[in-house]
Amino acid sequence: MKRVSLLLLLSALSVSALVAEAKPLTVVWYPNNSSEDWKDARQSFDELITKATGRPVVDKLTTDYVIAIEAIASGNADLCYPGAVGYIQASMKNPQVVPVATASSPKGTLDDSVYHSRIAVRTEDAPKYASGSGYSLENIKGKTMSFVSSSSTSGFLVPGTVIKSYFAKQMKWGANDKVEDLFLEGGSDKFFSQVLFGQSHQGSIYNVLAKKADVCAVDDIDVDSYFELSSGTANTAGAVYVVKSGAAAPFDSMAGSSFTVLSSTAVKQSPIIANMNKLSTKEFNAIRAILTADSTANNPKIFTPADYKDENGKPYTGMWSKTGNERFLAVDATWYDDIRAMMR
Image (cartoon, rainbow, N blue to C red):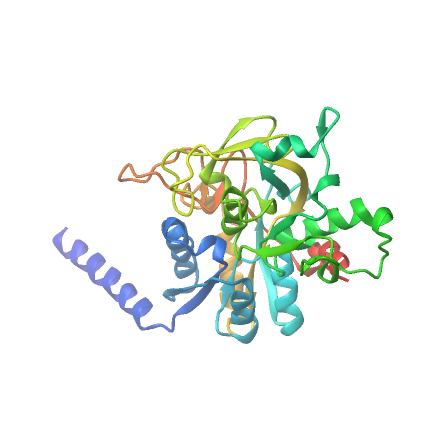
């Protein structure tokens, strides 16, 4: 028995040594997932990649979407978890940047796999945007607007497209008027008086709650762990979200502050992407296989149930939520063709 235990120990040490000696893989993270409160979730993801490839993983944290996109496109990173726009921008720079997988819907299916892009205001100001029994975008014109980044899908392209569509007739905008031309800057001759970029979804909603902006674009998946639904139906116009007591920075001094959703739009789930100049086909296939495995779907540190705590009883902030049968599913470039069309 002692001999068997010794052999197992030596085998484990040999595997650990091989991993340590292997060339590290780099995962670059968007600002939304680069803060300290996402550290455990990043580590859980990295452990999957190491298990698949036998290579250690180094995290590259960022404060700007553009840095992450350039890193994956240039080969300074091997993997990334961007939005659809960031993936498309990276693939335009380097066609060897390809999707690996994306998170499914709670049904475990792909066609209805979405998150939400929301246009929101401080709850105290919500009556200014009331229209009948609901809310309208009508009065956002001339306000200070906070987007996330010009490379953000749910924090710029989608809400910008919603705003353009709503005001197209009034502003005489046509198909050739691009979102970036209309909303990148504010001014007396622009739609918004001022435009800010939060550089993360947390930063964008913070700008509104801190009264630096009147209106913001913000998704659900990156910020809802800091908030609780106070009234209304989640991700619909009129829903009110309140900062949780004990919320992490940047909301740690904002307990009780709230925002109200004016508009919410479903967006295709973001891809995990890889630079095939940096990975072998064998490694790519192994990463896709482990991501889409049942064991990953059932791993609470990857797909995290509400109020989940780790083995030490510490509250755990997961990157992907588990409310039903969520799992990773393989996707290819064509799945994001509707976002490409929006970018034209």
